Amino acid sequence: MPALRPDRRNRPAPDTATVVIRWACFTCVLVPVVLVWSGTSVAGAISATLGLTAITWACRALLRQCERGAARPADVDRAPGLARPGTAGAGARRGGRSGGANTPVD
Image (cartoon, rainbow, N blue to C red; front, top):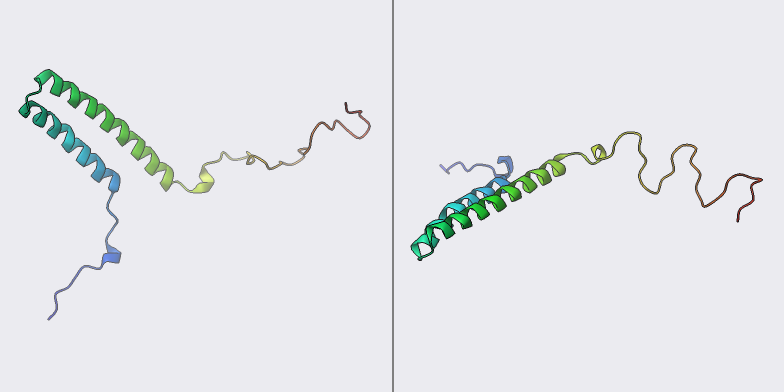
């Protein structure tokens, strides 16, 4: 009897942002250990850790913001009632400096 294999189409896609953040946190722990082991001062290793941690959290915030933007439908991006650039709303005039039919233009 053949073994049952899980159907690949039914599995959810992996959350790549979470994987990236996990690896970044791992390196935030690994880098100071390697620095101290290789002879760098503890203060230097701590400052490197703080810098890596700040960069990791900033990248995490940007990744989450991009995920929220990608998950949002395209029609939600614009506020209601506002026309797109280059389109005229109801009653809007297109063209240059026309003030009316009998108004002289310089």
